[in-house]
Image 1 (tube, rainbow, N blue to C red):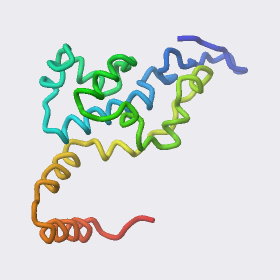
Image 2: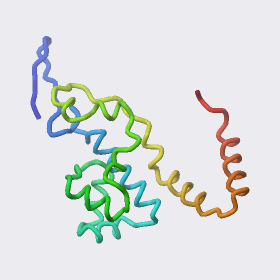
Image 3: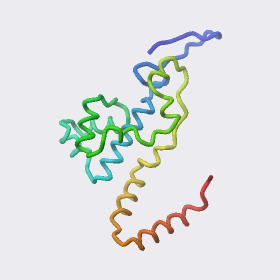
Length: 158
């Protein structure tokens, strides 16, 4: 971690190795991890099974999914094969705040990027709801479930 002194003499931390100034994982690494978890969960695959397919422990898979460990290019390629998605899948739906947190932008950063709310799509309950919804074979019932969820959720906040 590189330190720098401000005008007041206080020391601030600069981001290094792709992490935020506070040392938290880079939002891009978190996004990629969320996409791994999303696809794994939608396939009904456990962390243990994914780890076995990649030659990893489930703890290593957990670290990738949280963004605590960065995913290298060869591992990303292997993940794409095991999860049956193109490599680009892991970067799909990335919002502007996350894109701006690229390590090349963070190298001189002294503050963490804003927190993104895109993680709601990778929460366990969201994924379980989507999996259950996609198993409903009757299109009319699916529409009724969608309408029920829309009604219970209240008006859109646009």
